[in-house]
Length: 396
Image (cartoon, rainbow, N blue to C red; front, side, top):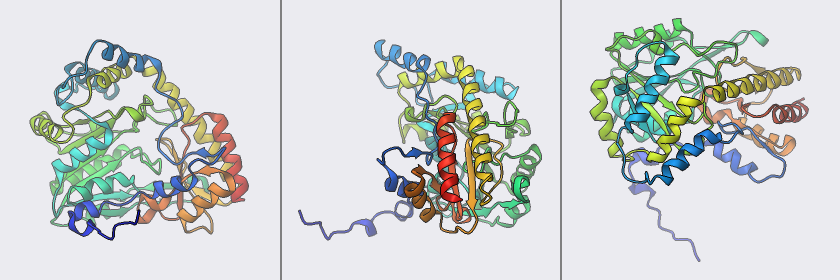
């Protein structure tokens, strides 16, 4: 059949056509299906969802819980989220603050629509997860890339959030700041002082903060959790938290998360859920309850695996003498550059060919991510050891 010459793209809304394509997909499509390839390009581990979670969903299905559900989440799950968050953050966070979403991405889209729209600007420290840019763009807003700095030498390198640089990027159109800590892709974890600086900035200029603290439990150097805006915020601060079950409990394919906000916004968030997804399937929510109420040992196991993977890949690649990076303190990614290499997409494809390892190109994480590669080390040690050995040979 001959391809149609008709092109309807000029007729759609600009915010839809401007949604950025994924640079990660370009490389994964290039390497997909290759025998023996070790895929470290996406943000998930290799462990399936544990049986105590899947069995909760199975019981719910057997009980016939297949009807329309509460828009903001069944009360039992919201209470479970409240118990979990109150325990982790050491304060009383009531269930009225939490609303169940179709994964963290849905929570991010709702948070963005609450804070910004047509013509509004949102500051995004970068390198950054590309979905931040996408969510802002499709909402009609303008993402403003604010580069972080990689400072120091060798093992002392670290990513630095410059609050003064953030403030200089503010214009009359600025409505929000996105803060992702621990960070995807860099592994940077904000200190309490850095969060206090951002919060003071938000207060001075009346800006919303969209806080992605999804990796807050994945601390790789002994802390129970990362510093959080929960530790310093007042009741009237304009902060929207996005969260997901995907990382802690190996539930990436389940598509369930939550958004946390001040209770006065509850009706508005419920409406946005109604007009976007109409709620999360009840049997999936039952699985979420099992994860929160019985999954702490699994979370600790995941963190231990990530720490072991971090140490293997950092030590192995540093030994080549050609790699530079800031050793990640949180999340489960190594964001590294190779001396003399400036085209991250070309390098990622070459490493597919020469090492049979799949990595995400830094270009996918914004213009200030070019020259880097992202490696997800949330896998069993044997895979990370093999991938590191292959990459070291190809790089050296």
